[in-house]
Amino acid sequence: MKQATTGTISGCLVWIIAFVVISMCILPISFMGSMFTITSDFAIRQTGAIVCPDNTTPKIRSFATYGSGPSTTSVLECMDASGNVVKEDPVGFAFLWIGIIAGISIILAGILAFVFAAPAGILIAKLFSKLKKPQ
Image 1 (cartoon, helix red, strand yellow):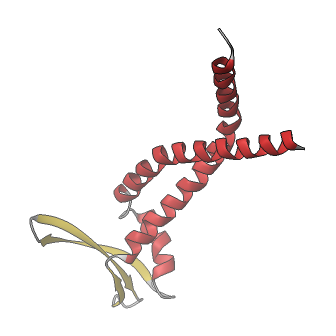
Image 2: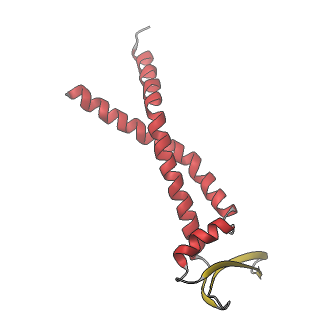
Image 3: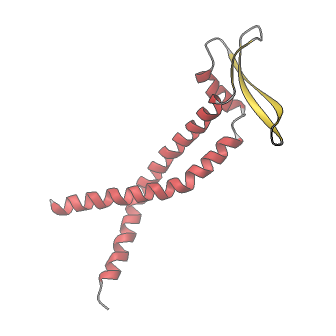
């Protein structure tokens, strides 16, 4: 029983380490990817379905702003059938899209950590067995 408990604890520890290492690689890529795709039609449809009221169409409006320098700002507008803006969301849709992509990335990192935990555990066990051998 003690051996099974030790194996389970070490297996979980290897999975956690693999998850952290894989997440450190995947999450920055997902954040950058979500920033590049934040104004795509797919992203606007997905976030607009959550942010906009029923019977409205989500559209993105981009315009130039001048703060410390010139830049472009995007705003999600929820339009009714007659073309009137019912709701305007300057920030929420962006945070929602980044969160959706980050959530998918965390799930992917968990699956990859599960796949790579066993080979990593074997590699670590071989490394420790070589270190324990008297020479």
